[in-house]
Image (cartoon, rainbow, N blue to C red; front, side, top):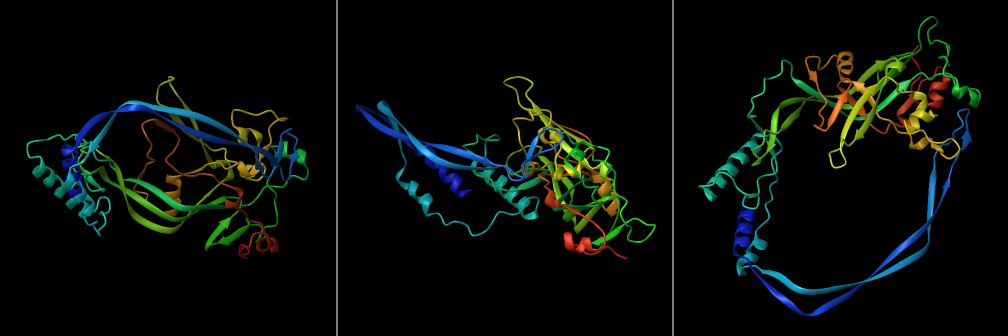
Length: 389
């Protein structure tokens, strides 16, 4: 705040004057533009029954072949303006930097800083209720809880959100097509396999959790549940603020078991209502996530609505990284935690959401999905523990 006050005093004491350039000044600038030649390789290139060429990856290698230069001249003439600071302006450079740090958001220390800031402003400008941005001392950079002017009705249940550090999934794979034409057969059935215990579904123990076929198990690591504490605003802003969440509980592992057919995928469509209007987006969730796409993606899911021409477009499997969504109510119910919450998913006013309150994970790759087999294959192919007997 002291620095802010001194800066405002310097600005008020600055002297500005103009002068005329007696002779035009000419300068020359030269710009160099490289030209590159690129070659793309397609490892594992093949064409399946859908007619689309596909590869495990599309790797572009570029080399610079030549350079182009461009020279431009600039002429400066006319009137110029300059500003002279007061002689004591160098004092601001002599201020000792504080060794303390700003208090965390919503902490009691931050609330005390807000009170001190309000008092300091009232002492500097005792007769002013509204300050221009350049007149205001710099406030502490933390947020405090505020009482909204519209006094909204408190919700019947606490609003909660959830975050996780990482995501992975375990599943029993479907039958592998014996030839490329089987890729277009959508009636491929789940293999019966050999049950771990005769007459019962296959099971496996992963991280102390017993998984039972044929469900897919989603693992959420280092989970934190956040509960809304009110509305928070930056010190000195005077706004109603945004919903503020504080951690209320943490667990090392959450799981969600569900049939493969009910896994949600997230799609986002954006458009401009007018050429000069703001972009508005709609986010939708549909139970159409296909695990098989992580290994051999369907062309429609890879390209979306703008389906490319099979003869000119190559599907790069490594570039397919969809967004998966998990229903927070189902996660809470299966883990028996946060069931008193009203789950929420914050979004801007320019985004509308169609679907449940969810937690999403973007850029899901095949490496996040672990196929569970039976017997010796389990420990050999995935390095996972063998199924329990």
